[in-house]
Length: 417
Image (tube, rainbow, N blue to C red; front, side, top):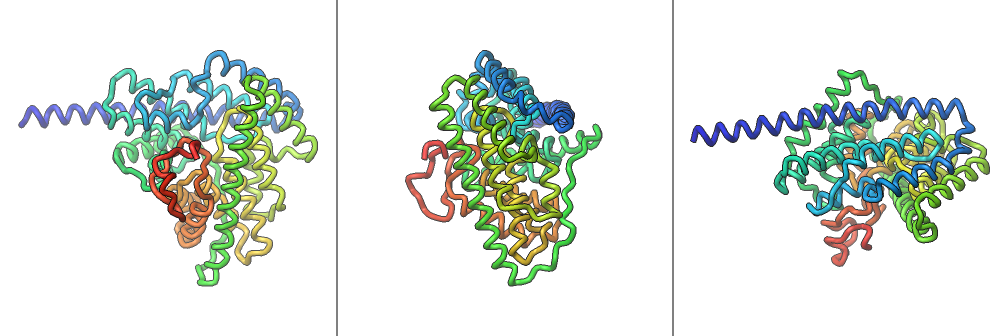
């Protein structure tokens, strides 16, 4: 009995030590990535002509991935594949490659996000640990969830959201909460390390949130439907650009060159740089000033061309941009404060596009406070259902119905529909 307890205690201590080291490595790596990203973003902002070099940057990124990273092109979907199949791997080389690809994309003005790099950096380290120590299938799946939670927490500074995002990330349906304590531990520890290292995240100011009234339900239903439809539009546009770029330009370097040319032409035609890079400044402005109807639509197009042609980054921050600017536009005819509509769009479009309504509801609480609960609960749920069976993560598996029963969808990936 004593030997059993002693053995179990040692195993638990080893596991905790492993997770602690892993959390520190994630935070240190993502911290360096975010520092680099901030530097190149400021540099490009001060040197707007760099966008003219985007096609040539695409050529270089394409050749690097063609030579060294063909197995790493799946992005965040690599983690979903690895979760469902032990034969699928997340190559360690994907960590430096996604760092290089994302930094280069942002330096020259590609319209992309950053969470994709954070999660893939974590995923590369996890796969290395799995190969090194030969974990069981249950432990392997827990570590992959830990990678998702740790990467998300490090990038956005929202540890509670990261916990639930790690469970909803892999499928559309009921999350499986196995490994809950490990995921909580790493997500919170990453946030602690970030505070110690002095990492600061963007603050979004809603200003005022009025007391909830029954009439608001009607306004929130309209807003939720709008957010869900824009999420679906984002997913479909990104999917089609990716599909047709790959079909008509199979060679990755040329595909990226053409994608860079298209982004450059769009920038010159619309004579604005607000759609390049992350676009945080426009997101912040959306909380104070009503945006035009075209702003969120053009961001969808710029991001779909950038990521669909093969540039690196992520979809989540562009979704924040789309949601915040759409919500800001809706304030021109919905009698709700502009700040709260921008905030609801910020989380709800993400909810519909990624199929992560619980995580997005928690995100609203972490970013905007408890007063937003009744508002976010309605819009996040409606957006999730209205967006249908589409996703920015096309390897997600459908394990439960959404609004309508589709028995032939169960067990299939989004990409198989």
